[in-house]
Length: 322
Image (cartoon, rainbow, N blue to C red; front, side, top):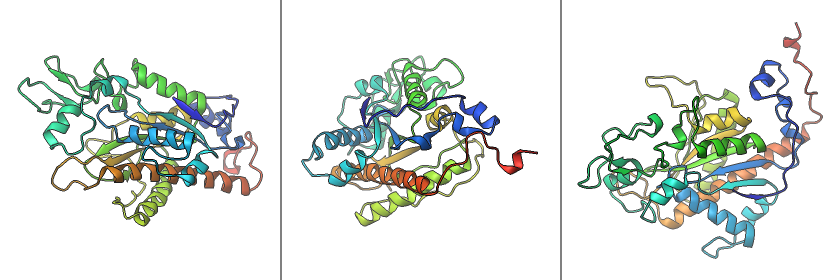
């Protein structure tokens, strides 16, 4: 993990569950006391999805030199980054990334891209595993190539056995979240479509609403840059058959109180209906997300400070005093 900005340590008097039960949520971590928002970035949670990793390595380059890896100056991004604490984990799945032999999936046909993502149980070629499910990674004993979604133990970090023994990667990510108590956390992925900020599941509606506000800001930036986008989601309840997956994004919220979400970027796989983007556009899509999230987090911090003194952490709302 690469960090920028000093750590502003905060006392923790309670975990999230007890802080909520006692209606003293600031005893978990009183984040309003910090001068800078804290942003956690996770790249390559799936090893074949290197677009987010590329965006984060470019962010590191910008913070170090002021220019991205194309040599293009990024003064706005650097200035925003200097006003935040950035926690940058370019690769959250080193096993999967090490297994990924191509540079990226850009220009691949869908079957080949699925092969690198989910693996195959067929030695004859690039075929998706018959059941690329996510029960401890969904790896069949007969699988001849383990896809890059998974670590070497066959675990997809996004869909770990969260109520059992965690994989080392997920355990490390959640420990970072508990230690740092980030204000925002984003898990970067790719898709055939997008770009899109996805609605987080199994979090309070207020968290969905906060992520939706960021999504609207981001879409405006994409539109001004003449880049593709998906309209922002509408907050809503979780349900359906099957219901949404309980994934690492939800765990990041419950472990740290972070406003967490998943972002998907088009990857350039050659499929009918897929979003058409150039490699340059893929990078710009990520750099604009970084700008939008930093700007949004800073504005929320400023708005909170301008709203005046906060209610004491041990003060209950009137409705709770009866």
